[in-house]
Length: 467
Image (cartoon, rainbow, N blue to C red):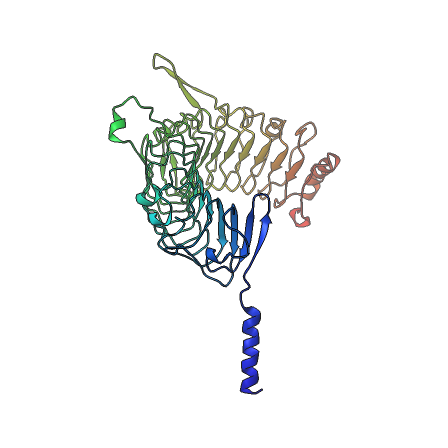
């Protein structure tokens, strides 16, 4: 093939793959456009922009530049701007400051390395801002102070090492997850309506709430109204006593995937509304005394994979103190789910779950239990799901099964069981039983299998499970 022919072929390929710039109306009533391969907002020529309310840009080959000085941009009513399909976004000095009505801005995945206060109008109306999956390293107080009306803010999956949170009256959700933060400090009163704070998957060693000097000795209500705080998958090795005492309205606390080695009741002081506590995958955690005695409203407790070797029979129970200072431990009547999966438990005291009468789900899989003591499940007759799979159980007594009158799912797989007692008259609500992975004696298991089939209970047992 000649050089001329090769040149022509190359030219044809370039033309065929060249970016095609198009715009089309997405919603005529709301007046929104979807455009492709724009290099600037000023390139929208085929449609009037003065009344444009929404704009989405999809670029695969074209870099988009926004914020030219002395721009002719005329979009005074633009309130929705979605740029999440623009992998290369360049913000010049003016940024979005020429969009005075912009309320919803998504620049996720645009390769942005820096945001400046000058990129936004003096009175910034943005209420929803998603800048996740970029390359940001710093969020300054000067920048964030611009967002006085911001409600929903997502800065996840960046490279943030420093964040300064100013007074942001309207902020309701702040997502700073998957960054490189080593410290984070929030001042009481700066975000009075903050309800959800995501700090998971950073490098935090501590979480701190600061009281302003003018508040410390005043009669101002000292409560941060957070409902959910996610600190999971950080580097926290120690909790400070009373560090959550200002979070009286907190309902969900995520502490899984840290390095916490010791827990005691003082660590959870003030969490009077807490409903869900996740502590999974910490290092060799020691639970001291009545660790959860202050958590009257607790519904879910995850203690999986924390290398527990022993479980005190006094661990659970809500501490009620009367006016004379006398106290007693009452049942935790709101508790519905307890996970102890993946620990090193070899024994359980018969009274371990005495203070959890309304427990619905109990997960004890992946431990080293050889025996389940008589009476263990008597206090929790509302149990509907029990997982004791992947242990070393050699026997399950009929008395234990008789206490499980409401159980619907029973998992006893991968133990050392060779037989089960007579099941007639037991487990009236059972719909599924996991039995695989046990060294069943075929003649003894045959009776159990007939019972399972007659009750139409779902189960799996491989032929090689029977010896």
